[in-house]
Amino acid sequence: MRRVVIGIIIAAVLYFAVTTALVAVWMDKDEHPKVDAIVVLGAAQYDGRPSAIYAARLEHAVDLYRGGVAPLIVFTGGNEPGDRFTEGGSGARWAQEHGIPSDATLVEDVRIGTWTRPWNVKSDRSVGDAPGSAYWATDPAGFLTIYKVPRVAVAK
Image 1 (cartoon, rainbow, N blue to C red):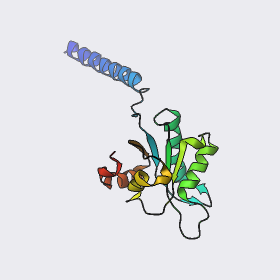
Image 2 (image 1 turned 90 degrees about the vertical axis):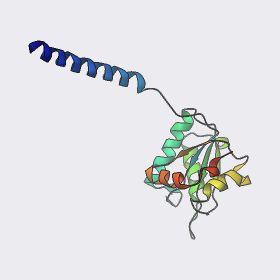
Image 3 (image 1 turned 60 degrees about the vertical axis):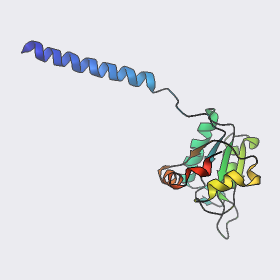
């Protein structure tokens, strides 16, 4: 009986040691694909200042850009009647203030709604030559919206 208990203890210690080693090895691996552009879905902005949700999306996009995921960030989002700034323009300005070169940013600021925004990013000439692949920088709520948009929207 004593050998069984010792065996179980040794197995548990080995299990935790192997699991810890695997986590240590894999935790620094970056699995982000290399893409043509990072697309940031717009969110509320207040007189040119991004809301907390939008700032989190922007920080994520800047981190991805600095990590070499893409050479370009596309900022989407129009404005409401009476707004002086657009979501896309506010996002691009914020990113530039945080060290992203202006030639690495593009703005899609036509107020058409999230459901058709991917098509606009692909076809609007103000966005330049449409990127072939994109990483969508968003939050869980925005991800649900992206997931619901037909995949043909981002197909090359």
